[in-house]
Length: 205
Image (cartoon, rainbow, N blue to C red):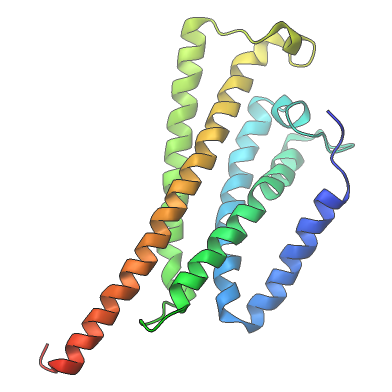
């Protein structure tokens, strides 16, 4: 696999830097920044485990980053590269849902707990998947295609399969969990709007 191109590293860093500047002046972009921090923070922690279980997941199944083999740096690099865009997208959509329209707006700080719950769910589902896949792979005597033998040591085939599986599950869980958070934001604003309307029509409520 061809090495990753330099612009694929520099461009995300530049865009995240721009987001930090925008978030300082525009409240809506703070939601995007929160999404970035939540998802990338989790992804880096997850990839610290992945890079130690099977570094070949990043050096063989991903475009290699020239000169980068240290597990800690691999986890940081791919945690950022793999998660930044999803975190920004999730946070920005949440920001739109939290601020547009006539219902009472939500402040960025009110999304801290939902995002922490999302990260907690990600960690739980990912860990459960990893343990289950590893156990069953060992029980069934999993071996990968012969073409992988030259690229990945045989003793890490189970680890490679496990890491690949729980990464896929993490992506799916983050997507579903992100939708759940968005639905909660819309429902919470609607609930507050109804409560405010009731207070206007019936001050004793």
